[in-house]
Image (cartoon, rainbow, N blue to C red):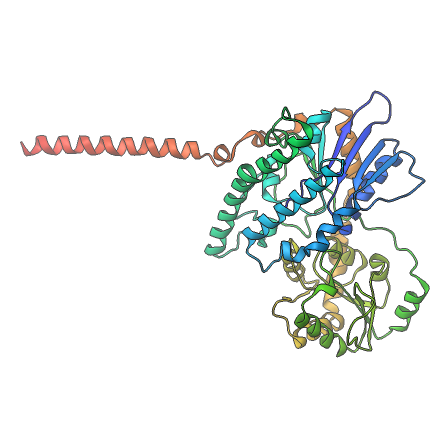
Length: 486
C-alpha cells in the first residue's frame, strides 16, 4: 500500500517558531494515533502547526494548532472494506493496483473539496518547503529507493510481500525479485504519471513533475524498531521512531474495571483493530470464532462494531470500542487475539500481554510471523482456522507461562534506548527547520535510476566487451588453424 500522502512541510522563519503544514489523510485511527503526538508536541513547542487529518484532536488548549478535518475520507472505507483492498489472500499485484486506485480516489475527493492535496510533492513544489515523510509502519521498497536507502529483493523483501529474510525458497526469491521490479515499474511508469495528471488540474500545468519532486524528502520517519522489524542498513535521513503512540496507563471506566476485576480466572481480549471490522467477517469465520470463544474457560472482551452479536456466548462481552492500551494493562488480561497490526503488537508488548495473531492484510502476516519467531504468541490463518485450533491456541497462550515470560524480555529490549520515538521525531523535525532542509544528508542513490542502481550499464558493457574478446579470439583461432592446415 502506498503511504506517501503523509507528510510534514516545514517553513523556517527567523523567529523561534516556524510554520509547519502536516498532511495526514490516511483514514485509519491506528495510523493517526502515531501522527497525532508529533503535531501536538510541535505545537506545544511554539510552532504554528496546520494539520489536515480525518481525526483532529480538537484540543482547545493547543493554541498554535489549526486542524482541517477530512473525516469524509472514511467514506471510502465504508464503500469497500480495507481487507478487500489489500487482503493477504489476494493476488499481491492486484492488491497494489487496488490500493493505488484507492489513493487516487482520496486525492480527487480532497481536491474537489478545495482542501489540500494529499500528495506531498505538489505542495512541496508550491511552498518550496523542506519535506519530512512519515509512515505509521515501515516503508515499501519504492520509498526506500526514493530516499536512496539500500534495497535488495532477497535481503530486504518488501514488507507487503510477507517475507522476512534471505532464508527463502528459490521460488520465493524469484517472486520477491519480480515483485521488486514490478513495483518500481508501476510506481514510476504508471502511478506517478497518473497522480501528476490529477494534480495539474489544481496546481497548474507549470507544476514541476512529481517524479522529480518526490526525491526531495529531507527525512523519512518510520514507526519501526529493530526488535519487530527486519534489520536493514539505513541512510542518515531515515529516522526510526517506534512506540510513539503508546501512552501512560489511565483509569478504566467503572463498569469495565468491575468486569475485569471479577475475571480472576483470566480475561481474553479480542480485537481486529480499526481497519478490519469483526462485524464484516464472513459468516463462516464469525461462527468459528464464536464457537471457539464459547468453549473457553475465561471471560472474553470482544470489540464488535455493532449493538448486537447474534448468538453471543454467555462468557463474551461486546463493545464497539475499548480503551485498548488501558485495558491491556489490567492484571487479569491474559491474552490478546489481534489482527497483528504494528500498533496493537507494540501496545501488547508494552503491557506484557502475549498474543494470538489472526492476520488479514498489509504487514499483518509479517508481524504475526515475527510474533511466533520471538516466542511471544501464536498465529492462526483466518482463511483456514478451525474452532479447535483457535480455542487451543488461546488456551496454550494463557496457560503456558513461557509466552508471558518471553514478552517481558522483549519489552525490556524494546524500551532500552536513549530517546523515545517522539523525542527523536521532534528533534529531527527541528533539525530540518534549523538547516532549512537536510540536503547534506542526501544519499547519492536517491538520484540514481533503477537502471543505474542495478549497474545494468556495467553489466551490458562488460557483456559486450567479453563478447568482443570471445569473437576476436575465435577469429584468431580460425586464422591460426587455417595456417596450420596449409
